[in-house]
Image 1: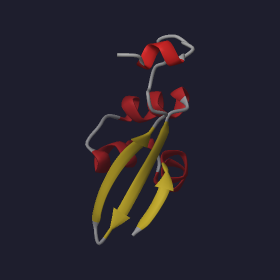
Image 2: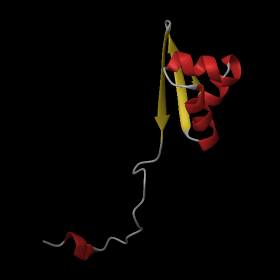
Image 3: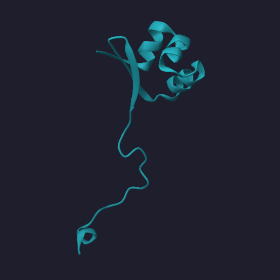
Length: 73
């Protein structure tokens, strides 16, 4: 199995072919690259898949200090 960043994969084969192989448009590939998202492409035995990694939780609603009283019954 080989894993590449989307940026590296596109550098090798171009946006149009990357989009065709991943089942999306060239425009979607371009937007993903410009957004700076952490997208990776896995290639294994002729199969290709892409996945994204992002922080958990994805959005921080607010920073809240947890105190002992928060855990009191």
